[in-house]
Image (cartoon, rainbow, N blue to C red):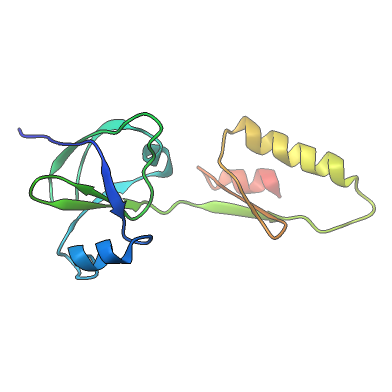
Length: 140
């Protein structure tokens, strides 16, 4: 079995429109995809198979990180990285004078931090991925 080794990222189709046009990514089915979870995007070495059955060995330099839309090029093909969707909880904290806001925020930070989840904070809304529906009850 032949494994294609990829050692660098050629660019990102969402950040480089010229790359998108050059490779013809907009044409459905004309390119291979490598579907990766958020956790896999953080790895620099692994082996995985594309949607067309190509076996890929990824060996990026330390400090590199894959993102949704990155293009991996080999000698005769290009492969677009697609992040697999995941469930996310969003918490919006309303100002309520009856609760200690600092205590509430520390509790939320402690719970999320103990689960080692990436978070996003935008416009006062905290969002983070969940692994099971049962986690929703914990945050209610």
